[in-house]
Image (cartoon, rainbow, N blue to C red; front, side, top):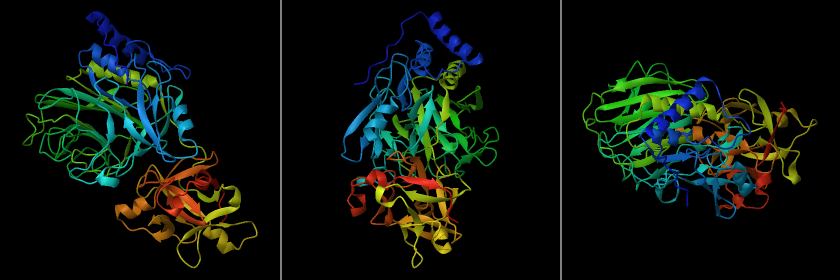
Length: 523
């Protein structure tokens, strides 16, 4: 069980001193050193909220502890090879995730994040989202789970992983403890990847309906991030931090456009929404440095049903309140509070976040957008084989290619790397000798095809590079099937899970068959 954080009973002046100390650290530019693994007492986000009288009632992170006394579980992973699970905790009290435990447990296979544990002691854990107003793509209409190694990051000098939300992926808790309901005040923040997004509905973190359905205006209050414009938007082309209040993404007091909500694109983004009786606010900033900006602070929206609010108290991650699940994003940490936090408290929290030292950690050997590449197999049988399309049909296969191969064979094994058609944080592979046609999966088989404007076909042609399963090159995860990776099987190429129901999901040589070295192009 997670260790319940110890709430300080020190006198109020010392509580205020903790906030002042955090601000001083921020202003003096004191990021966590690469070797540090534990926080000073009282200095982490939930310590700061508690000291100010607005304690965390939910605290989720796959990267670090959010209380200086926390020494429990951060998240759980389940590996594909045998279905067993493992909890991933912190290296020390108040410290960073033990990513090595995940790496060891998941070596040679893939893992999914099954639980994101609540550090507050209230048991508000996040698990696989059930069906609601919208069905998910997993069994029983549930949403998919996130692939555990899809969002590598460095925080405080330590390797960690975020929660990579692809369309169809989502987490939820409909039976919470202590989360605001009705018009009760609350605050929340989320640390997100400001470059991983789409225009789907809705990449949220926060308060939602307890039956996974749309129960009307004002029945939810959550941080939203993305570039959808259907309900509200700010300046520029997005993305924007907005508040999802159900049946409306609000960027200010009015539905639709609000000029004070700017487009933001920080690689690591702090996004804040808070609300109380006839008052709410949006704040945001660069999670790596600097302070917070206030984009809105004022009365409830100028629309029916939002004053008073009718919040229900469920918690969602990566989806909308009715389980709308077409969005994308990456989550690293976030909390929800009891009470309406002050700006001073949030500024102190931001100081701690920037001091934590979030740094991007792309997988080594990943293909660069705009480059021309070939993709070499790493299985011992086939290290001279490359992914290519057949000449007679559109199917993708692996075949030997060498300097003496015909020009047509070299061209068929060459790909131009494009920004992911269905997810800009991933990649797509355009055929070098068939411009306008892309590598995509259809009925699990890879082939080259022209991609239309539908979201499905664009996701089918999008693959997310991550650390390889056998230590050579990279593995290429399907953007819309988070447990499936590009694999060769009997010289044909598929997307395959580890130990699934198809022949190409065979566990034999799976880690080798799903690992690819990105090489110089043959043509």
